[in-house]
Image 1: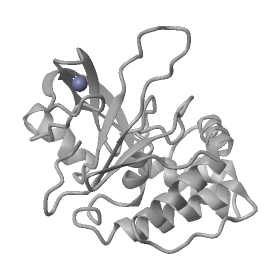
Image 2: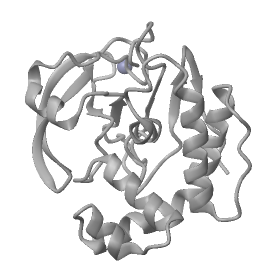
Image 3: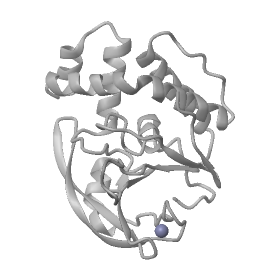
Image 4: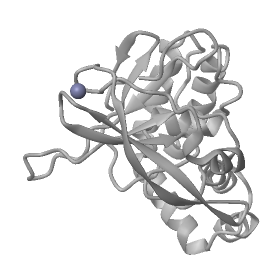
Length: 237
Ligand SMILES: [Zn+2]
């Protein structure tokens, strides 16, 4: 997906859209490991040199195909950012090319969501202080936690497997699934941060990239990852 060259991150991921009863799969989003601040990204706008990924289905290089503006909130401030679309001529499919600070269908940056998950799952406080801390309504934070809790076991297994795949430490599962998932995020992050390009991207954007922006989305299929030049599909618990 993102070209694997010296100095660029080695991993990228995508998700097939939910199947459902429709014969045609809805577009997938492709997340690229953007290391720019939201402000830098927003101010560069359409002139940014976006990576040109390969098609997830046929691996042909895709072309840029318009795009759209969307809102993103960080530190209580909303900004409008440009999200390009890419298209595969052979498959006639278009995909949104999301920077890794964005989560699919969420207004807040992944760093905000991550900080809240850690504060509530591992900290002594509760939902309300964590929500107030990042200036997000507590009802929104409750929903994040519910979504995260419902897939925490799967996330824990996925990231533990990824850590092993990247040559990291063996991660022992904890009895509590959300804690286990957070622990596995850190383990995989320790493993990947030794590879070129990732340190500047940061841990939560790495998590966003691995989950295809679907850390707390309404549905999450198994992510498909490319590690180096190999495809990697984590085991499903
Ligand atoms: Zn294609």
